[in-house]
Amino acid sequence: MQIWPAIDLRGGKCVRLQQGDYARETVFSDDPVAIAQQFAADGAKHLHLVDLDGARDGKPTNHEIVRQIVAAVDMECELGGGVRDEATIETLLDTGIGRVVLGTAALKNADWFRQMCLKYPQRLVLGIDARNGMVATDGWLETSNTAATELADQFCEVPLAAIVYTDIATDGMLNGPNVEAMAEMQRHVDVPVVASGGVTTIDDVRRLDEAGLAAAIIGRAIYEGTLKLAEAIEVT
Image (tube, rainbow, N blue to C red):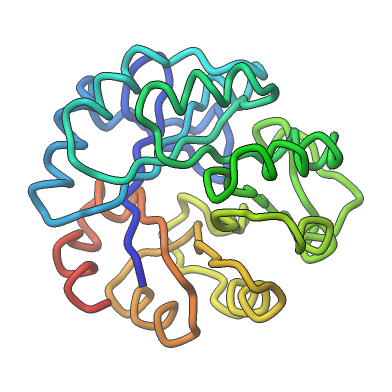
């Protein structure tokens, strides 16, 4: 199982939100590049980036710091947050981002997203953020009437790189991941599923690994010190 440490960007800083709530923000560093370099030093080969400003506003705004991060580390990087059009996809790929995560755009314009997956095979990731099993959109500010598995089914025949499945109820809360929901999604689809939300301890990592998940994103636990990145990488 791959381990993807996370850097959430807001105003050029490394922050974490609780349950996607912009009012519950913790700033962990003014230097996201240094954080990425530390992750690389700890042995990480993958890096998950989120443009929180983009997720909220519908247009990524942290391009320069993203460019600096990608240039500073030899890691496979993916980024999500506010990606709504092909021009943004191209801009991110041109910065060296390996995979681009789309959620809201895929839900609201499924035909367009299918076209983009065909044009950029294995470069696009479907981001599914769920609240009580229903897809949340627009930076988690809205909850749709679409079930998470139903959204995944809509793209079963396109060349997705992966699905990042985030359980909003557990994200940033340090209460453990929803392993059952993550495992159900992985069983439901043929593409790699990346578990996101609530990973807190080394036991959580082991449980996701044993449940067959392809990868796990770890954020707040690393910053708070409840989980050492190097140890998580070692046990998978």
